[in-house]
Image 1: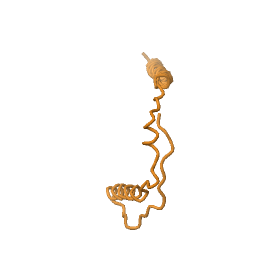
Image 2 (image 1 turned 60 degrees about the vertical axis):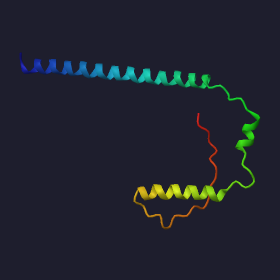
Image 3 (image 1 turned 120 degrees about the vertical axis):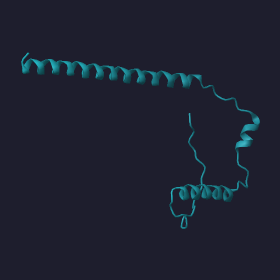
Image 4 (image 1 turned 180 degrees about the horizontal axis):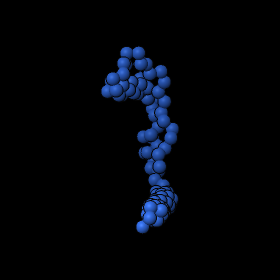
Length: 106
């Protein structure tokens, strides 16, 4: 075999191998994408609406004295603990506003 024939066979083998790998990777990506869509639909259909009990709403509503100072103290302590674990100075950190999150996770 000449050098040109060897190079031709080597390039053919390389192209076939790489082409096969990329085709399989594309097929795997498509399968994962389809499974994500199917599982999302199943999860949304399977999640029944929770029945509302009379006592639940009263338990979720905050009383007039909700203790924002306590919430601010808890948040401040958590942030100071996190910052001390990260070796950041906590001497000048002040909590100015605490508000309840409004988003809901699915």
